[in-house]
Image (cartoon, rainbow, N blue to C red; front, side, top):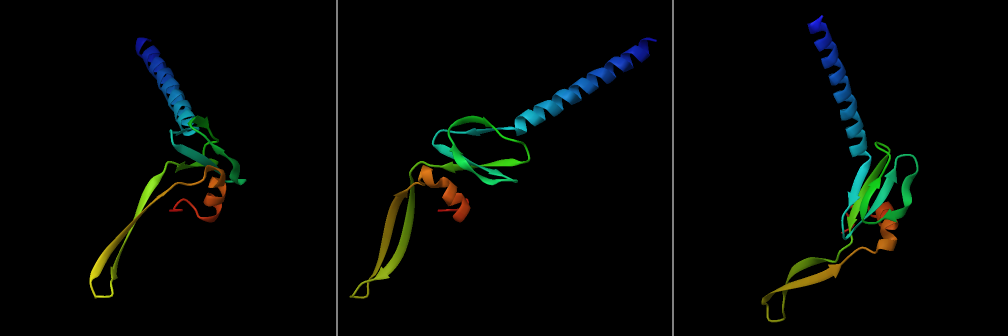
Length: 119
């Protein structure tokens, strides 16, 4: 009788551990975090891109239905280099540095028209 009670106890512990693991996985997949200097746009598989951007913090989503696209909205430098010739046939290296950042009001348009690689 003692071994049957131990097996029953271990079976109940295994079921409880499996249930807790499944609940933790569901909770983990329904949360996402937007860090400072970032904004998120939610894509819903049924409705498409949702009409509002999401600010900083931890937020809920519907697992496997919604997906967050997170954008860095801080100012970043982009450097462009080119080699050009002068009148006296000397080669000159030109470098241009541009500071840019996406407009937070236009993130929905950026995702819909340009995608995630808008740079």
